[in-house]
Length: 220
Image (tube, rainbow, N blue to C red; front, side):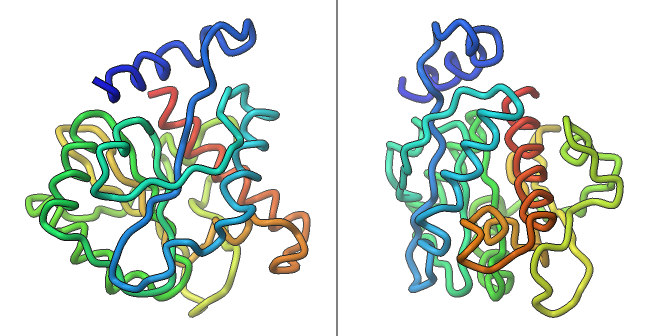
C-alpha cells in the first residue's frame, strides 16, 4: 500500500538522510471544497518551511510544491498535510471517511487558521471524528519543545482579533493526529518577506514553530 511505503520512508528519514540513501519525504497542501481559499499562501509558504526544516533540523523533504485533494487516495502518499484558508470548508461523507482513515492509519494534519476558518473547520472535523473534541494542548506539550522552545505556546504572527494564540489537538487512541493552530497564522509567517512585510524576528518565530511541528510528527 502507498501509505505503508510512506511510513517506511518516515522511519528511515532521520537515520539515513545525511547518507542520502532514503528518497526525499513529501508533504502537501490539502485541497478542499466549499469555496474557501485552500490555496492561500500557495506560492511560498510550505516551500519556505521545507527549506528551513531541511537546513535547520536535518530533514530530507522534497521542496517541490505538492497539492492533494482531501478525498483522493493520493492522500496516503503524504505522512504530513497542511491545511489553511480564510473561509468555508466542506467535506463530503466520502472525503471525511478518507481523511479519517488517513489519520487513523498514521497520517497527520496541521490546520492553520488564516483568519476566518474557525467556524467552518470545527464542524467538518467533527464529521471526521464524531467521537473526538479539540483539546487545547498545554505549553509543556512536546510540540512546543522540540529543537526550538516555545514556553508560552504558539507565537503571535498576525494580530487578527488580538486574541491569545491557542493550539488545539485531536487525539485518537493516545496519538495526536491533528494539530490546529489558532489566532497565530503561522503560514503567513512562512511566506516570502515581501508578501506580508513581516519582520525577520516574526518570520523566524513562525518558521521555528513550523519546524517544531514537522519535527514532532516525524520523530514521534
